[in-house]
Image 1 (tube, rainbow, N blue to C red):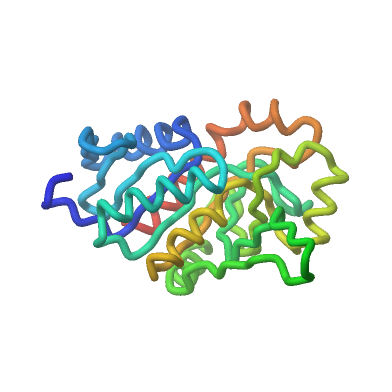
Image 2: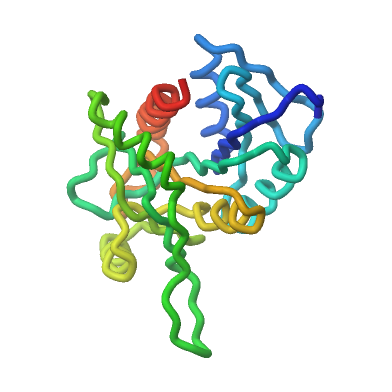
Length: 228
């Protein structure tokens, strides 16, 4: 990677198409440099000092690719996991965005001993900044709440309720705890931001595909408002 690139923020999307949507959205009005000297597709926004890349699907792959990028860009101060989610809270609608006050790993099933589920707090200064900006958002709601993380497609209302009861989370997704663990290992902050595509029920697979453009557009709008 060129020495001139010194990202302060690493924005990772779980899926390549999520990453492509964000990059294409930002390219309309921002100077975006596509990078070709990494093992992972990436783009750099100099004005934000932000590196955008796909983190990969699942907690382990996300953490591995996050660590690879952190090794390459030691100037990073904050890791953001930016993706889609299934809603666990009735007040959340498609397109609403959840800023994670903490990420809880709901599928960490330790049976030899009884311990609380792993929880990772979101980056406080970033959450405070987003709270101030959220009042000016129109067209979708920005919630500040717990996000559940686990390598599981939640596609029944019964399972969604169980995770909600277990964690108190407002939405559920896969990779957030992988991002948080990588950031914690490197002694830097992390933040999970998720846009709702579905209700984590039997219609979730179809709803995810249909609503992903809406969700990512709103997520892009919030990131733009914050980082500009």
